[in-house]
Length: 633
Image (cartoon, rainbow, N blue to C red; front, side):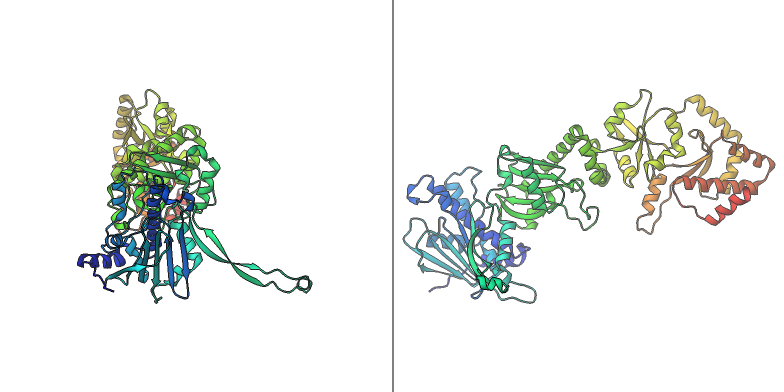
């Protein structure tokens, strides 16, 4: 029997495919099952117009059988089969497919499920097999043929015995090594698991004779003697795949319980999802099931968390977590996408550059955004539950990429409001703004309760203006990335100019500062570079002192940035503000007038440390702080 040689380029492609393209060797089973389904599809299509086929849809099946002693795995189908010429063309030339040719010749519609292709996918068998034998009989032919190969050295084609149309692929598995366990592909539980994972939604049944164990019947004497049970093995034919994907069923057939049960079972979550969406899209063509979990996974905000949707091609799993389908700010979404426009025989690396994938990803992103907006509008309580779990991720999404995504995400944000301590959107804040209000005011702190006590909020509250309480580390960075919302700028209550004072008030405080310029200079000097200046405050009503900042870096941003692992530390341009109407200012004026600069300096340090404590910041020398209190008391 003559051994035929692969072409030189085919040899190189085979070597590259085996060693590089597929990340996991288990993929071979998915590929061979897909090819079997493809072959059945062709004959089923022919049976619709040819009564001689003599088979209906229920007669078709794919069979899996494993022989541990012979170390062989067989995948069989009763599909269209192949002639000697087709074996030569489809298997003798790597990456040559009969499926696309069949589809084009028969002018099949896009929804016809030709999902695999002989070629690259078929040759994945050599990742696990030292020898591959294909026995095939084409529908309508009197002869069967056998194709056999041990890899890149070539192949043979000879006549064979086979009664009915279809194809058998027999893999003689490689021997186990220290690094690879090929015997696992002969284990029925492993095979069932792989079929469930990759081929659960192939639309023809995948069957296998499975061995089970059951107790033997006991005689009455054995029962009375309480003899231990004896067990016997028996064989049962099992259908290993569910065949009809939930996402391809008509929505009218399904209930809410169906979607929730699918989620819990498929994505191993103990909690039912907060929200789901069943999508059937035409341009681009794909089906999808998207879920928003009720709670964040324990590792969600860690480097270990892996985002992505399951990606299918006509019900065949291509990737378990396709990260390219989700932007980072929607990484909490779980689910799957099934598209007929994606090739089954593609690797992870090739998939990243697939144009169709990018179009689908853009559509998915828009769908998620619309679903969240609908939930915010129509199911506010549920949305607030979502926000507690994943709101932080949306804020990161605004801050990342220099605010490029703010238009997509800003209407989804919620912040605690000083009015009734409830969550509000930016739109709700702006809609409720008083006519004379110029800015969207915000304050930062560890908690709403802490912010509520901040001296800097006094003047804004006194004017009756609402304040947004920012309590997460990322909040102020996100706000600065947005800059303004509906033509309204954001303004920190610690900003140097709150825009609340009229010209007369500004002139009055300016005159008072000039009168006490020597005192303010002395206080600034006493603090020795800790602050850029000490000034009189217009924002304080009852409190004696507070810290504010000038420039882009606020006190809260300083805290956040310095908490990160870095050799470089940042420092806000700090300003110590003193309430000119408070009795402490009168005391300072008295010390200045008597020339007691030493005591004045001690008061300055004490007031500065008090301002730090109010801000939730550490004081540099707690012992000195304690001693100063005792001394001045």
